[in-house]
Amino acid sequence: MPISDQVFRIAVEVRFRDLDAYGHVNNAVVFNYLETARIRFLGEHFSVMPGPGEPLFLVKRAECDYQRPIPLVDRVYIDLSVEEIRSSSFRFGYTLHDGAEVRYARAETVMVTVSSETGRPVRVPDWLRHILENPPAYEGRRG
Image (cartoon, rainbow, N blue to C red):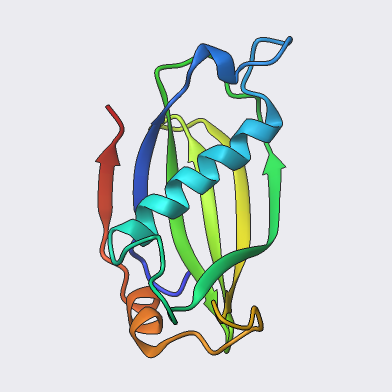
């Protein structure tokens, strides 16, 4: 269950090079799409490249349940939601779909907050916790 009803939606262009020998988006490429959604979400709120002493947000776990192959279409839509916030980690949920009724996959990533100096887990900063608890709705397109 998401933290908020707000969904961050982006559209990612499907490129011919994303396809595999079967003519659909390769399963490994889907993780690139998830990364694109995550980077855009985080980039809406702060610089993705941390400054000195700022925490890093690293993928601890990523998983995907593929529901149907993604064909060569103009774009695939990704809805990102904040599913859970813990002391030093947070979980994003993703739904990949065609913008209407076809769902391609459901995925999630667990992000861990670590010190850029020690590499050890640290508490999710209060400012980030606030953003994650109150994400603005967004619908963007890659052009």
